[in-house]
Image 1 (cartoon, helix red, strand yellow):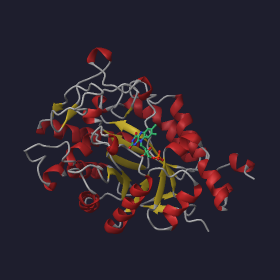
Image 2 (cartoon, rainbow, N blue to C red):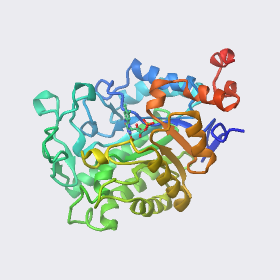
Image 3 (spheres, helix red, strand yellow):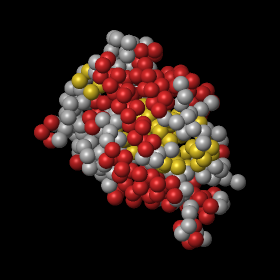
Image 4 (spheres, rainbow, N blue to C red):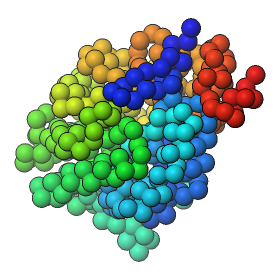
Length: 362
Ligand SMILES: Cc1cc2nc3c(=O)[nH]c(=O)nc-3n(C[C@H](O)[C@H](O)[C@H](O)COP(=O)(O)O)c2cc1C
């Protein structure tokens, strides 16, 4: 019996298995609108048996994109383009979620394959925003320009933007909503003391630094149906002295759980450009932290980071470290990873995929 290939019910949503695709920017949208590429990217993993697919960081406002080619959910054209993609993924047996996000001071960047440097206004860039006006790459390697420090009115308007995108996510057919609270983007940058040095009610102690996250969760939960799961992705550690630790994040998730969050997606790093704070390179450590989070909060927990084989994914679930094993890069390498893992683990691979693909499974 494979633990990985056991269904999981979260609220009214049932995953056919516990292997999910982690959110991955595709840098392939036009004005935030999904393209045929996205149908292929999402559709292929749905056909390939993924239980859950969390669509890429999707910006709540145009300046919330990381690059000009990032996805958005701030207008109706974006919703229209997503409806057939999500309907198709669902028809293939996958549950499809979306990660709504604001890039904060890490926005206005070139696509990775164009170097990832900060884009100036005359290169299609924009003024970024952050809890403070401190620049991301303080060593100047990527030539970021100073962000605008948000006023309280701008913070409130941002929470409204998260709410508006939540309504659009529902209209687009997503069944799980994830708030991007990781990787140094806006919500994380409010919580981590590495970035947030504000002295008003949105900074200072735990209460102040967690206020943005708490108020956003509260506002979003009011419009995201109770029957559907609400998740938060956190950097469960900043990996840097003076930054957030797993204990800070457990404290946060207990509060967010009581505000109606159902699931925590345990990523790490990204608050600063330091190599030791990078995202996704800490396999065992990160899964161990997810296990700690799960034990302490009782929340449905997703582990992520260097899970790339059937044995690793099965181990994460069978050992009780997490409820969902998320993979990013391995799903890029192999869109049929779920089906292949099922075969390897002796699970019923056919039941993981729909006709006609199932017809061809040996
Ligand atoms: C191409 C690519 C794009 C990514 N985009 C996002 C994103 O939009 N949101 C996010 O939270 N993480 C993003 N990540 C991080 C992944 O979700 C994941 O946490 C990380 O890659 C570690 O998992 P892995 O070892 O299975 O690749 C991205 C990773 C890759 C490789």
